[in-house]
Image (tube, rainbow, N blue to C red; front, side):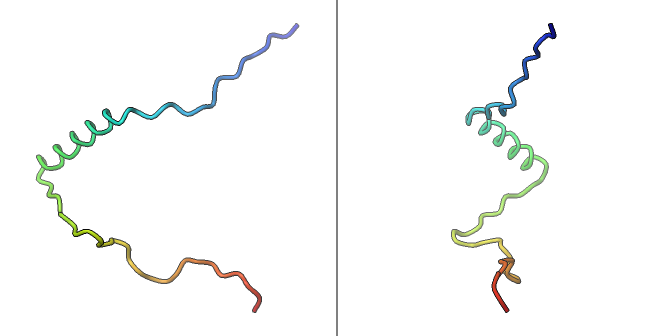
Length: 62
């Protein structure tokens, strides 16, 4: 009789806790500032999106 093989789980690993992520971001920001980086304050409501041609596809009869 052939041996049965159990397939490993395909589930994704759980994300790191928010505390770990927050600490990591703090360390990255500190390293950026220490290396001479500068953080710009952007006013509320300002967008960095560049307006150009619409990427929306219109389907219809001509």
